[in-house]
Length: 114
Image (cartoon, rainbow, N blue to C red; front, side, top):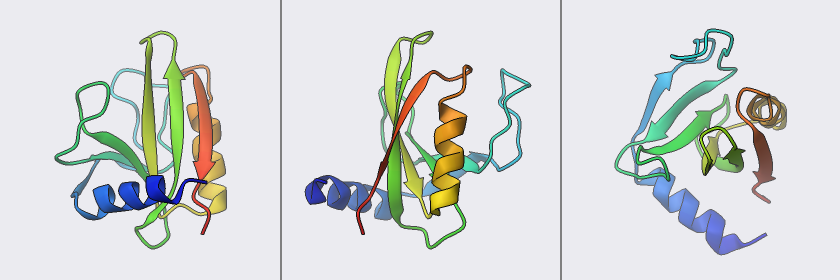
């Protein structure tokens, strides 16, 4: 794995405020059948490909970067990164399955080598 990538991501996360706008168990604002399995939000002061803040999932562990999910959505015709913060192996598996559902498209889980 590329240590510089993880270092840069760590710096971005540690220098940004995390806003959770979809708490664990909340329903997607446009799709009532989608329920978020973990806290979901964004890094304030950052910009993703959709023009909003970089998306994050926050798990139950210490709030450090533990991985990332790269997504491709054929309906929206975009690709994004979702940063995983403080996620256990099981939480990362749950997020990966969630993001690979028919509702979202394809997703690739990348774990930080610690």
